[in-house]
Length: 98
Image 1 (tube, rainbow, N blue to C red):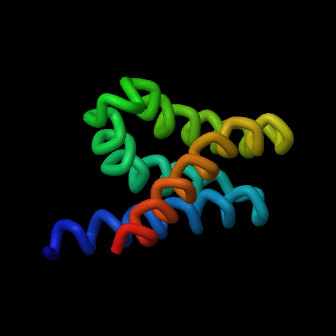
Image 2: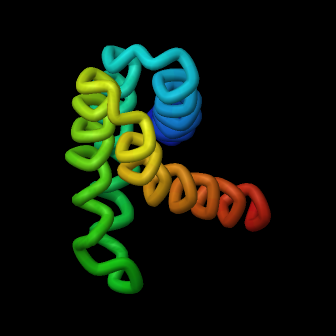
Image 3: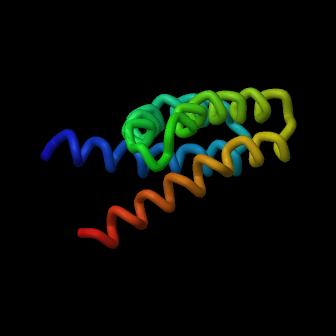
């Protein structure tokens, strides 16, 4: 029960930090979001429907942070967008099942 709560907390925090990093143009929040995105990507990669492509999300968020650092905001948004869409989709799916 505690691990499930931490899993949801990490997912919510990673979404919020990723969006905040893009809005505030501070790459440190993006790096932290990439670290917090690891549990969701590992969990999703274990599901046969998603195969192994969710493992690309943490590196994409790290690259998004580097793009913010190099002042390439459009590239940063494009790199972060797949994770944001996927994580919101998974969280909506989980909440609809409860």
